[in-house]
Length: 400
Length: 130
Image (cartoon, rainbow over all chains, first blue to last red; front, side, top):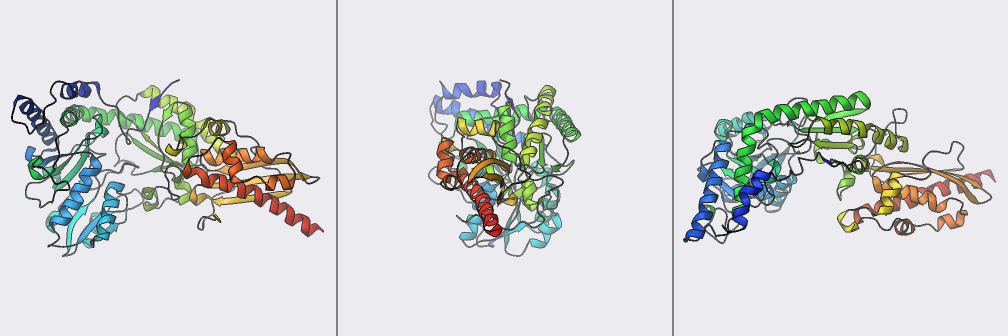
């Protein structure tokens, strides 16, 4: 059966060239990058070459790059590291309601440790207002953390404006750029961000490796103790093959970024236009233009998202949903709720994440398979234009 | 492998070919449970003749498990007496579907509640008629 992967915001396939670059470091070049013999020296050279590639991709200095085990670790390192190192200065952190859980739950953990956190609202497109950031900053604020682009709906935040506010008020600014790196041009110097997280597997690199950019001079405590690696900022024997893969992947993706952004935006718009031409009561989630090239998040009213995913999966198409039924929780996506989407409508969300291997034929295949699935699920649903969702839906009525 | 959130073949089969989809126009009992805000709502309509569920239909707004459990519960009660139908529990439904992922067990509870609500509605109407 046909298998089409359209869930590139979740993860991406490893590129062949990246795998090739990694293989020697899983085989004969197995040295510990801290060893002083030839095996160690070769591993060290590979790690430092990768660091230069990552730094070059972001407009940073190599010494400003810390390799981590994943994007989640980079977020944890940035937020906890800055919070704990600057506790003498203050105890207040500002973030947004649409962050990835790697940021949200780290902030919630810090609240238990005595920090205060402001969760900024967003508008209907998922945008944070830089004026809200300015208003929320107090003399006790040590960090602002706002994501570069949202993983669910793809909305791109006004990062330069938020960074400027933070610079004026002398507050550290971290951005979770896990979804943005390799898709949008990023120059940390121009943007004025102090810390930036990224993850290799979102741009055709391997899983299990990420990086955190930390501007020179930022006071930050390490998360891991127990070694001198990464200049004492991240103890642990380096994942040499993973780091090499990250370097290769970022270099390749940055090189083709402009052309790919254009191609994926065109594919995404073709998919969107084809869907709304065939299916009614469909709503676009996220900003119409300020959005990641390959991300299309839609709500199909009167049906539930997981049912759509199952139907598409049986047709060989892999997508994801922000419905409650795809997680262990009862409430739908916190991102859609923060954007003011009706919770019942939010249950019908589907995220298409287009990527490198997708082509026009894939889009056409989805446009052929999706409408009958929606039509069939709507036939099964008791809701329709004639019988809409109740305006006020109370708490779940389950006597168990 | 239900613990990883995967569905059994039986669940997939009922999702793909749900039994008894629809709504009985002149139903003798109607049961509606759940809440669309939480992602699932089920409506079961029954036709009763001589204390037996002669016909049953369902409509569901919900995930694959919600669809499969309502489909299964209608299949389990069709042709049964009211007493037999009241003996169908969420456990009966789960077993008939060869298991459900833990996070989906609430769907089977809703399915049980939906058929019980339809029967209660029928019984209430009978009492009022007397």
